[in-house]
Length: 77
Image 1 (cartoon, one colour):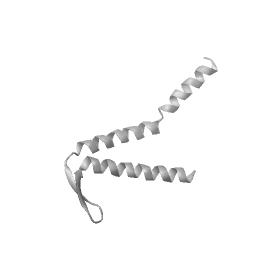
Image 2 (cartoon, one colour):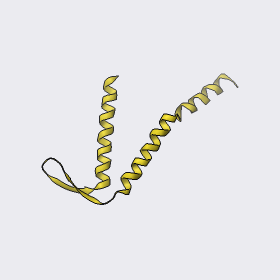
Image 3 (cartoon, helix red, strand yellow):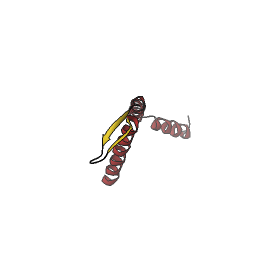
Image 4 (cartoon, rainbow, N blue to C red):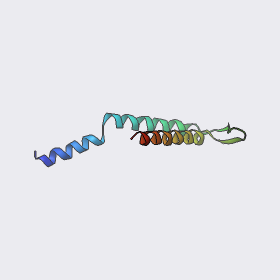
C-alpha cells in the first residue's frame, strides 16, 4: 500500500465514527417518533392557545433545541 491509499482509508474511517453513527441512529429514531404522532393537540403559548399536529410541535421543539445547542457550541469556540 502506498501512503495515498492509507490517507484515503483513514479519511473513510473518519466519516463513519461510532459517535456519528450513534447520533444518526438517535436522529432517525427521533424522526420516526415525531412522524408517528400525527394527531392534533392544543398548545398554550403564554396567552394564546393554538391547535396543531403533534408531530409539528415536536419537530419545532427539536429544531429550537438544536439551534440553541449549536449557538452554545459556537460561542464556546
